[in-house]
Image 1 (cartoon, rainbow, N blue to C red):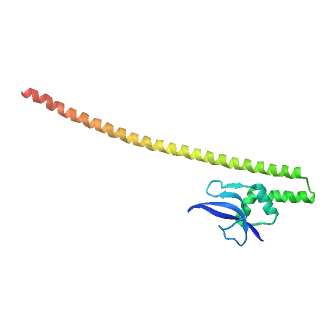
Image 2 (spheres, rainbow, N blue to C red):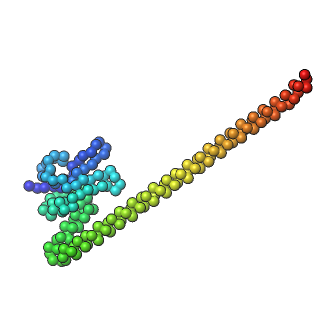
Image 3 (cartoon, one colour):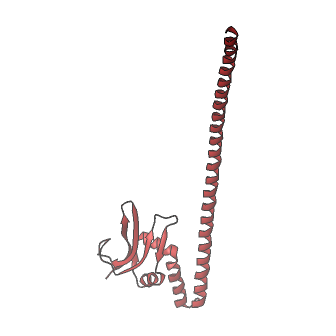
Length: 176
């Protein structure tokens, strides 16, 4: 039986979420599968992958052929690196502890890179919010200035009307 590791679509229209499954190569995309080994959500930034690492490694080592997308996912998660390191252990290039140390170092470096990317995104988001706030303050100041000018014009108009009425009011009692 030829097995494939592929994505099985789920979620709603316009918001796809995938299951990473091991299935017979002849089975349809969303049909029968042998085992579910994880999930993949491309809608988040960065894409969220929840993977059963041991089972994925087992299936890759037993010869299951992943699709292109799944191969990229497994590569990013380190399944292919661990397969490569285990091959080195089998050949006697190094022992299991050294292979695990190399893998842990790679995983730590990858995690550090992801944290740096998230920190840069947070910094950019904060800078954009500050810029928007600064722009909004400028707009509010301009509006406040226009309102103050209108109020000053209204007060001036009322003062002119009052000044025009005073001489008329003084003349009226003199005539009486």
